[in-house]
Image (cartoon, rainbow, N blue to C red; front, side, top):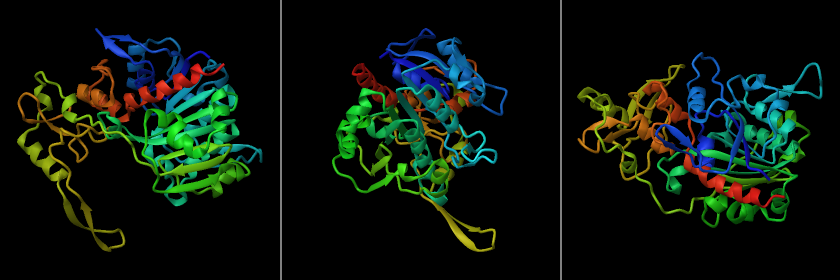
Amino acid sequence: MEKTLVELFAGVGGFRCGLNHVELKNDKVVEKGNWKCLWANQWEPATKSQEAYECYVKRFGSDNVSNVDIFEVDKHEIPDHTLLVGGFPCQDYSVAQTLSNSKGIEGKKGVLWWAIEQTLAIKQPPFVLLENVDRLLLSPAKQRGRDFGMILRSFYENGYDVQWRVINAGEYGLPQKRRRTYIFAYHKSTNYYKEMQKISEKDICFEKGIFAKQLPIKDGYEKIVKNDISEYKDLVEVSDKFKSEFYNTGVMVNGGIYSVKTKADYNLVYPLRNIREEEQVDDKYFLSEPQIEKFAYLKGGKRIPRVKPNGEPYTYSEGAMPFPDNLDAPARTMLTSESGVSRTTHVIEDFKTKNLRLLTPKECERINGFPDDWTNTGMSDKKRYFMMGNALVVGVIERIGKEIENIIDEEK
């Protein structure tokens, strides 16, 4: 089976960087891996500027890269491929019956999961790897687990079994404590599907599944839940009635759900100090005394009296954060607001001067595992921070990708 790839919601190319062990030499991309990307789509709605797409094209070229709304794409025209990848937003996935057709299902407008579902239904790729925020397993608050249940039901209806894991990259020797949900699905036509059918759900989660082999977990679990998405009549009934706890490790086999709460089994820590630039850093990244005072306040512990809209008083509390950031631990999760004067922005001690400053865009790329200057394609610093706040951790994809290659090598 060929190692061919289609990338949806491509961003600045994190999946492709991880799968193909990409390097940047003299501003030229070197793809050292075995994957051939046949088609990619990146479109940022509600804005004229398309910096992520422009970065992707700058690095990988414009051939077979689409910059239109994914809902406008005829999914039949997407090339046949072995692996579909994408990092899609966490949204409200509820659906309803269409008025004109009692058998039809209508998702909320603009919910990007349905573009993936359409691709699954039409192209039936053998394998799928997706990334989303960790709260996907919990949403929405009023019907816990429904949204992830919708996704699992969609896979089930299209002939897939699924494994998932919420992975904190910092727990596996990578430079950032970024927690994300990774979803691996495999079609019933594959040898891998047939092999996994012979293995218990527990063994898939703890030993023999894709995540366990590359990202080991400790024996034993704290919590467990079982459910069955196949018992519901259709997606509408799932949307209306399904509710379940989902834990950080799990598998769906023939619609049956097995989910457990587990802990990482890995001992190496990647300290923040290892990503610092050692040469002279531009003065614009250093903090003034008033900025230092502001950050110290924002990151300090607080108990602030406030009043609810109904007039009831309460106390808003938040604990203290390390200030400056601990150089012996991985970075905290980067947000799109990185570099702004806020509680979540990193502040570090400079390597040369020992003065306090912000992370540079290059350091943010290192925290996510991108090559240095990956986003140095003409966009502003602010946009470069934004791109890295949206990006995935490349090192996680590298490890998962190794196992996907092993799986594909066993296919006929």
